[in-house]
Image (cartoon, rainbow, N blue to C red; front, side, top):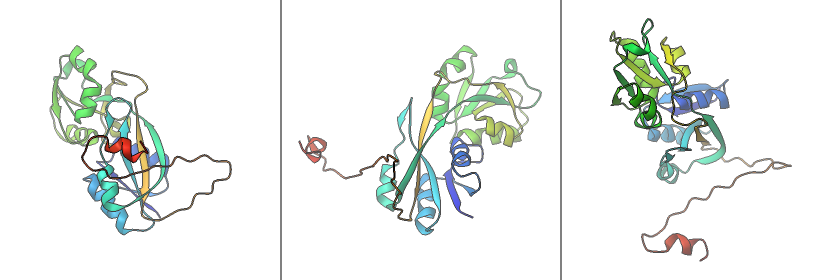
Length: 210
């Protein structure tokens, strides 16, 4: 069975993307992006599912790891991001005073947070925040995370789809060590170029033939 690595905890949006891309593979969480790349670089048939950019917050900054580990990009996947306020079973929105999540998720739900006078607490990831909420006994605390996190950690969705903008998506790259030659046929493929530049004025312009 092929191994698919993602960064984060079970229930993360990367986990959700991996399930949509290869539901029959063995999906394995990693603590860091670097760990994902390292594992895939040592295993010829493994894959990683890595977020590259978000429609609202922009580039995530993984390019240096592509240079470092020289993995190949096989495909892209656009994952719809729907943030939910997750609380303990038996709690309600009026009980919540503190909300925990990744910085980007908090930023993307800032309108809801302000409207409900919630105190933000930044954590490493969305799913990890949900896991923490599931283990404590504090009724006034909640997490912003996916509906998958609610299912995995047996939490209650107190408010669904609380993001500021509808249509939020994250672009994921599917990568691995193995070199594959695509079967073109009538399909159209995107070609990605990565190159290093000297730190000087007009370097990008000159590299593109200017």
